Length: 187
Image (tube, rainbow, N blue to C red):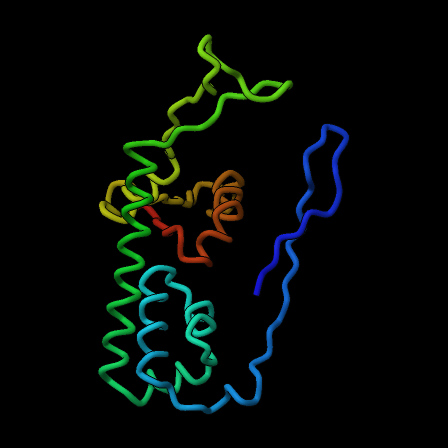
């Protein structure tokens, strides 16, 4: 379970937040207990909204190990689990598309706080998420919109050049995470 807790106030009056992680152990009475139909329904409903297995198991008053064991042994439950997860991911994708293309309203602020118009309403500005748009384009059209690194072989003694090595070093964490593809141009 994650808990967000205000730690202290900064000189400007905003709160610094600290993320504390609490490990919640499964009580012995929850371990290895069979799931009831009501628990299965609550778990699947929560999973279809959150796409979070731990939170869904907690909402159903079941342990993670119990729901995973049920998934492994019950093919119908596995199919329902996959459907619920797909439903949640579809909703997440729809929200990403909305933020990228329709945008969202954000309050306009200055050093003194919110800015108001002549009628006393808070002024808002429409924002769009370029990073989400790039991510969606990369997923839908990978051939044209995925990030690519290229290595040149024109350095000393036929070795890779310095700028190409820098490109590879900068992209290495993304490459390892599977978020970046590596492309060497043909000679």
